[in-house]
Image (cartoon, rainbow, N blue to C red; front, side, top):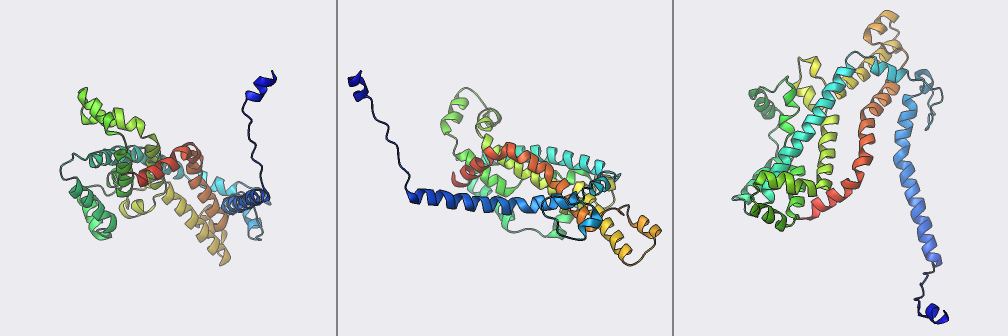
Length: 313
């Protein structure tokens, strides 16, 4: 028994010196400060949105509401336009994200193939509009000539290809072993099969990353509906309706400050129990909460996808 114990290797226990503890404490303090600095604005906005409007004007709200009230959210969700606007936004985000992944991914797969004739020309051709835009008026003329103005497809078709996302996906696909494609081609697979059955399953990190990019782009977009949806209120997305609610509350508040009558204030907007600041914070929380809820599920893919997609190829 003694001989067996002597033959067993001794586990070396590394001893921490004072400098190790100091470094750990410094890192903990720095990360705590960063965490609080990052989280505080969100908690403060949430507290203001859940606080009574009259009490909010006194100031001093930190991370907890002083007088709890949901009037700001009630003003948002009782607006007759908000639910249709959410439907437009959700439909646009889902269709736009799937379409963007398919079209941008297919282009990235083609440009990642070294056997593609004119590969360098196509790459440069895609990069040019990334740095040099046509301008608002030429772009509007093109979209109007395609018959997309005041239609739902103006949200989808112009956004199917994003050059930055294309570069990331192409770089990632370039790092996939060529043996996978060669073996499937020997078995008779065409390029569609190679793309969907070989490359798509092994590219989960970059696909999740690009899906998040496309989703956030479509969910938060306010510019395109403002420019291209001019006479069809049913196609206004959530961002435009939330902005109109903020403007109504701000206008009603200014009229109240100017001494306008109750009838005029009611006509300006049904927001007597909220002010512009509380309704602004409530709309901000309403717009970012779905993205915040989805992000943790994609976080494990996000860092890996963006790093590998940036350095490969």
